[in-house]
Length: 125
Image (cartoon, rainbow, N blue to C red):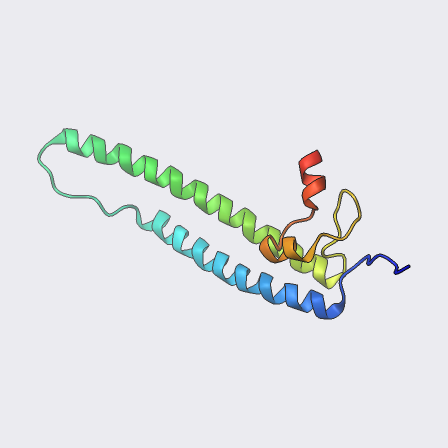
């Protein structure tokens, strides 16, 4: 009987690292874009004589800024998760479920490379 695999090989870890680095670069780029949008504001500062329009614009600007803040916070959390996955790769614990200790299927890691749990363990939570 073949012994069950308890960790991914160094070659497999390098494959995962490449996927994570690509996602990390993309996530950081997206985060910079969001930061730029937050710093610059909406740019809708038209010169209208009617104060009602200005009040509506202010409300829309506030809503847009809140939305951008939420997106930026989510993106930052994603970046931190990807960076944590890189740490797990370097200490060769990547792909091991933190709940069950079983190996997370390769297909799942390809789709969600920052995951720390198998689907079964996540459902039981």
